[in-house]
Length: 200
Image (cartoon, rainbow, N blue to C red; front, side):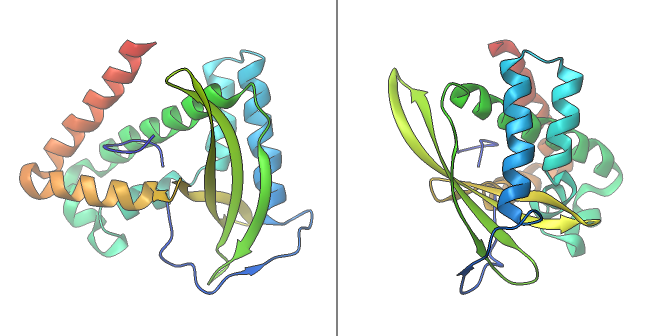
């Protein structure tokens, strides 16, 4: 679930952690509530529009898109006149990878392990989930880095078995941008989306 535009995102902002107390407004409670709505919709074979609406409430695409191009100070300079196109394609890819992970694991309940506080209102929610891979069942640790956007908890990184989606995107997208410009990045993103669509 890693590699070029694979699933995985996070924070270098996490500092000496301390376990937070779970409340109705805690990161772990918010994540569990929103994630399980998406899982139920997948099991109920909801429409793409219904799934998209709920996933989009959970994931902070703006943060990931900005981070992928080196942060706010570099974003506009790298994507130039194609920022909206870049962000839209990356959003679609993140959404699709998240839903694919849920579909792989929908037969197994998610174990919500803990939340750990970091700096500046950032929390890391740790989960474990079983998936089928190469015909074998495996337990995977998935950590969700969360912060509040307009007063609502959103995921800004997903770390799968220690691999950060945000860092992976930042490294790989910037490497392509350096060699091929934003046009090359957009071509790669579209090709990956086309390949995923062909698998369905």
